[in-house]
Amino acid sequence: MAGTALTGTTVAELMAELAELEDPRAREVNERHGDDHGVNLSKLRAIAKRLKTQQDLARELWATGDTAARLLALLVCRPKAFGRDELDAMLRESRAAKVQDWLVNYVVKKGPHAEDLRVAWLADPDPVVAAAGWALTSERVAKAPEGLDLPGLLDVIEAEMKDAPDRLQWAMNTCLAQIGIEHAGHRARALEIGERLEVLKDYPTSPGCTSPFAPAWINEMVRRNNG
Image 1 (cartoon, helix red, strand yellow):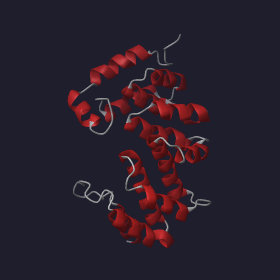
Image 2: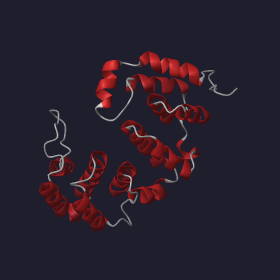
Image 3: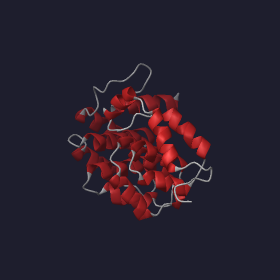
Image 4: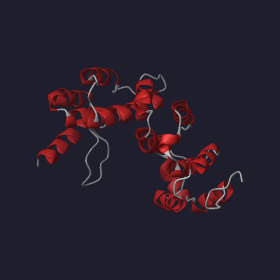
């Protein structure tokens, strides 16, 4: 039966359940971060745990266009079941920050198309798409740097990060920090770029948390790793 999960839960029933979880105060906070939903993510994860993996249901939830439903879809999908072009289209049609973040981290990174999409997205003129490419690049910098042109990445960061749109700037800054943390031979240059550009230098950071300002982030993680 169309629209019905293996558990007997329909998309309509799930949409009603998500609507009941909507919290106007949570939505207000989320909207300041580019996310148009008001559902507590712990409660969303509890629903996903109940549903388990269901690829057909995930596709139906995604097709609703609703941000909370799409987040749920990304939790119950089978990452390796998506095609390369399907993932590309999903990224481009989802503009909510959390949806894009989960799509990259929970789905693309776990599937067979991560490297192909990383290269394509990194060069994309859309800054939101490019941000996803930088997020995948940060993953490779940390876990599989063989073949990456780290000096070339630093060149691009040095030239473009300062004036990049917020989401792209954040992703490039993360890559800068990962290069400095993971690759001692490039650490001095990464620190120098961070100090000179001062991106996120004044970002509010809670007590006990590491600042996203790259030099502070690099130095703290190197200290921990060497401790």
